[in-house]
Amino acid sequence: MRKILSKPNNIPVIVAVFFVVTALLQALLQYAYGHGMSEAEKTAIVEGGNLRYMWIGATHMLSGYDHLAFVFGIVFFLSTFRDIVKYVTAFTLGHSVTLIYATFNAIQLNYFIIDAVIALSVCYIAFANIDGFRKYLHVNPPNMMLMIVGFGLIHGFGLSTRLQELPLSEDNLLLNIISFNVGIELGQIGALALMLLLIAAWRKSHVFQTVSLIANYGLILLGSWLFLMQMHGYEHTSNAAELVVRGEPFQKLSNAKVAANAGAVQHTQWKDIFSITIPARDDMEYKLYVLKGASFEYSWKTNGAELFFDFHGEPAGDTTGYFDSFKKSTDSQSSGSFTTTFEGTHGWYWKNNTRSPVTIELKTKGDYQHLDLEKALPQPQTDPARKSNRTVHDSIDSL
Image (cartoon, rainbow, N blue to C red; front, side, top):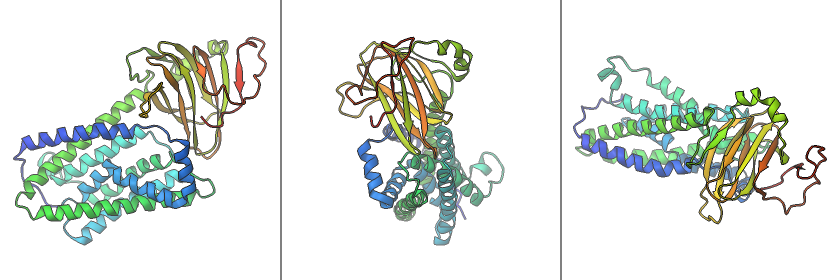
């Protein structure tokens, strides 16, 4: 039986928890918004086999602050081994089902929405811990077991999104998924053991009721902050406007506008046209080197499949791994014009989460330099309209 807490009596400490959580999230979100992996990292994963996927699963769970916060809320007031096993098993079964099913069938949901719901699950479990349904809403709370299973299913979609960013093998796909899931459970067991030890020691203190109340309000603040951040990201990647990290103007044609102006696009005299094939469950980048203040136009579309993509830029000479992400979304096409705010590489990262190869036709024109000019490329195809300055590349091996 979950205990009911007394009324709050230390508001200043709650406020302090909020500011600490905010500071931690600033660092965590930088990690969460990273894009892609290097070729060396992908090679290490493939060569490491299923043990490597297991290790990634464990470390992902141990660094997954939203998942851990939810588990922490579940076990906060459970004092018997039977209850702990029952509720944690319900959560485990829930996220395992959707992790395996969604990944095996290459099901992709909007990651901002999934993470937003996961954030709300943290708020929910903490609200239930303070008996908020009875105290504030004057209703009986929903069945806790069913809610934990339901939220577990949502958490599984979030875990699947992370797994589908990895280079999965079509031949050993199920083993890759199971290995990752086993790693998730091992990481969860390790984190859970530490949580229970801390809570057990904490429960002996005479201030347990007071501090536990503050902790659960802290979980509500944490979940609320995560929810707002994810909805902010969703807002800037689901509408027609681009997410601009720097202050320079950036314009994009929405899908509807692309369709309306299809005739005009067909007559655009593009400088370069590239055909890029991305294997199943793989990823690829293509970059242009552009000087500060230069402009270029682009348009790309797939042969029908939707891809996750990140349009971004990296300053010349930077060795820290910093980059500006101008747009992240999942779509089958994108087009627009761009004026740079720094000298460096600018281009696209695409992730193919489907079980089939996807071909992209990328068209560009403007002031830029290709980063693959020194590679051995097929000769340009003949185009009567722009035979002198148009090149078409059959493929890009590694960028």
